[in-house]
Each structure stands twice: as C-alpha cells, then as structure tokens.
Image (tube, rainbow, N blue to C red):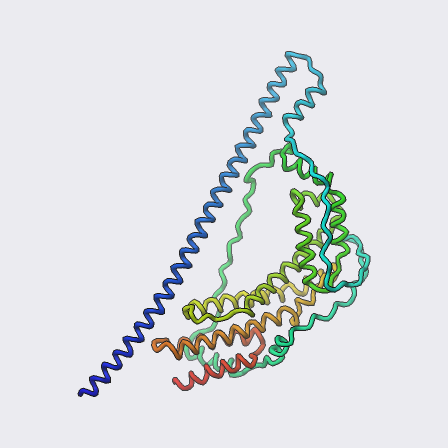
Length: 420
C-alpha cells in the first residue's frame, strides 16, 4: 500500500510541476499579447489624432475659400460704387482688381538636376523613339544573373517526397476534414472622397505655382524626359536606383502629374513601367530577405511562433502568385521599354522565395518537435497534424523538399509512429 501511495504522490507531483510550467508559459504569452494590445492602442490613438488634425485643416481651407469669395464680392461691390463716384481709368481699375484677386507667388529659379546614378552594367545604347512611334526590335534578353553558390546548391537538391503527400492525405482523411483554405475576405476599397473642397477657381496659389513650374522648369523637365527615354539597363537593381533618383528630382515640382501633363514629350508610359518594375522587385527582394533571415526564437510562445511563420508564408505565396499572374503581360511591356524582366522568371527571385519557404518549413517542424518533447500536456495529435499540413503546403509550393526539410520531416514521422 505504501508503494502504491508513493507512486500516486510522485505522479501527482509530476503533474503538478507540469501544470506550473504550463501556467508560466501561458503567463508569458498573456504578457506578450498585452504588450501587443497596448502598442495597437497607441497606434489607434495616433491615427485618431492625425484624423482630427486633417479634419481641422480641411475646415480651415473651407473657411478660407468662403472668406475669399466674400472678399471678392465685397471688392466688386465697392469697385462699382467707386466707378459711379469717380471716372477712373479702366486699365488702372483692372490692374488694381488683379492685385487683390491674384495671390502673390514667388516664381522659383530653374532647377539644376543632379546627374543620374551610374549603372553597374550598361546595355548597348539604342536610339529610343518617342512613345507612340515604332521602335526598333529590342536586343535578346540577357541571361539571368547567377545565384549564390549556397542557394544554387540548396535549390538543386530539392526533390519530391511522396511520403509527405501520402501522410498528409492519411491524416486529413482520419480527421474527416478537408484542407480547404478559407476564402479571403475582400478588403473594402476606400471610396475616394469626392468634392472634399472645391477648387478655389483659377486664382489659387496652387494653380499659380503649377503655371510657374510649367514656365520656369521646362529645361529641367526636358532633361529628365531625355534620361528616361534613353534609359536601358541589364540589372533590375540599376532600374531601382534610377527610379529613386528620378522621384527625388521630380519631388522638386509642386505637383508632378499636374506639371508634366503640360509637356507632351514626357515619356509617361515608360516612367510608369520603370516605377512598377522597380517597386515590385523591391517588395519581393525585401520579402525574400525577411524570410531567409527568419530565426525561430524559442522564447516566443509556440502559438505566436506558428502564427508568425504562417503569416510570412502567406506573404511569400502571395508574392509568387502575383508575379506569375502579371509576368506574361508585364514582360512584353518591359521588353519594349528596355527594362530588365528576367528577374520575374522561375529562375530569378521566385526561386529565392521558394528556398526561403523551405527554411520556414524546417523551422516549423523543428518547433513542433521541440513542443512534443518538452511539453507533457501538449496535444500530440493536433501538433503532428499541424506540422504535416504546413509541410505539405510548402512541399507543393517549392516543388519538393531539400535535405534539411527531409530530415526534419522524417524525424516528425518517426516520432508519430512511436506514439501511436
């Protein structure tokens, strides 16, 4: 009897220590969630303050427009009385009226542009004709840049693992659930506020400043137009630097679109295509850097770590999908404007994103194995099913597993077979 009692006490003590450890983990997770909630509340308060400031600014502009119209009407009335009292010269009256109605805007000196950035590799210069005219056929696309040796080695070793698909189907069938993704709720597009404030006719300082830029910055804009028309690069990174320089120069204008529409020689389609290519590449490159440098911090609670990795994988899959969706149409436009497009191929940035996904799969399965071994109260079946689903998802996206993923998957499968 004493032995049975000691065994019972030892078992209860073990369970008690496990519950204490579980409670400590939940307290840490609760603390992290509270910090995140307080951070979000601070952001909401900041946004509310910005909204209030903008609302007050619009109200001031409306009051200014109203008072401006009132002053004009009052001036016209006084001017009529003065004409009846005194026979003033028409030209003097007109000049005085122009003085009161037109705001005084100092015209700026013509802008002296900074030189464009030097490209890393220069494409043979071809004479680019204006948009709308027939241009000579572009040269054949250059071969894609070679990948780093480490990345090239990992992508070459990616192979299909049929066991992943078989085990995934077996577990899903056992659970009696379909692995269907929940339909993404569309984000309502914010309707553009129309007629927030009427244009203060043609006498506003804004319109006068635009006219001043059109008159004084002609040489500056023509120089930028020639640079855009003659731009031809082999490396998309050079396009990114050129667009950064171009946006910096155009920021000198009062309103880029309003001023440039007065210059018919401005190559708007090419400039927009270069911006589109540069921004798309920059976003994908930043995403690849974030995913490839991801490290699973074991101090973070397991549910939160899972969420971070899943959110990052969602962004990777969305980036790959968007690139493949626009690739056929965009590559034709980029060829016409002599913009590099080989980075959109499967051998370019997409391959690097898939390699980053494989690293996420390995980190995810390692985190599951750590939870299975260290947490005695963890739901083994739920964790294993979660790991199989995530690994199957990345297996399908990346087209297989590399050596690290295969090893982590086999370890997870061996543990599952022993626990059955």
